[in-house]
Length: 321
Image 1: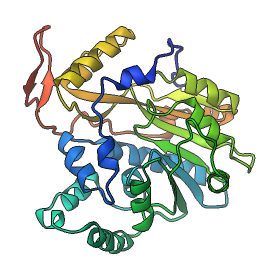
Image 2 (image 1 turned 120 degrees about the vertical axis):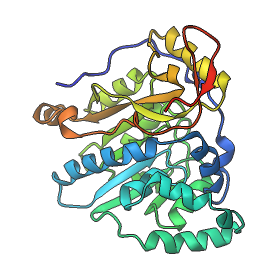
Image 3 (image 1 turned 120 degrees about the horizontal axis):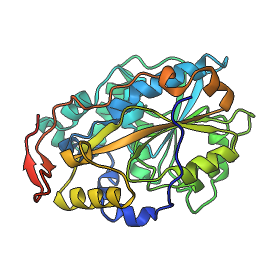
């Protein structure tokens, strides 16, 4: 069997997040242009790395059922990961579109009009239905209005019970995907989502999680719902470059305090995530995760200038590839 999750000391996610750059403001716009200016400017690559993994999991789940696969994009924001999963697009294509000078001149209403036409012009993934969940109302509304999401839920489930409408939408979810929201959400959100299931077939969970955030509490919650969690063995996945030297230094300190060696990964100026997938034990015995999916880790992507600490010196910005 692939490597399973190890037990770790519970951490205060709020404390860990205090060392990360805060990008909340970019999710408050009516369209994703600021999202691509900010995160695209930091070589945010994890949606593009995650989408092929999610596609393989969707194919595996589709082989087990006669109905379309319903995906819940947890922390969906503007639906970027779902767009890459559903359409033959890359993150760089979308980034180039939204950062074009002529696009910057448009109103949000005009942007929405063009985006409806843009996404409807691409052949979508057949046999897939996507629901987005995110407390950012404007981002969820955008993704739904332009046709990336089939339905959107702008609710926060950490501290609130899902509404009746949310419970109905979540009842038939087959796979839950996320690329960066663990750390902002905990096992409480997963409990709320899985508590809505009514078809007797618990959704699979696939999460890309930054290495600084322990996953053991979520693993325990998923176990109570009949799922076993595997961590993809032998690879990590680049999320983005660090925003500034403070984020770089504090991330290294957080990792080292947890006994996690950042050398060769975060020390080179890139945030790294791990992939956790939770399925019923019988399916894992039949085909473990490392045989179920193949991956691209992002290690060979050409990044911009990154912070790098050499021989214990102060971190410097270097062009490393």
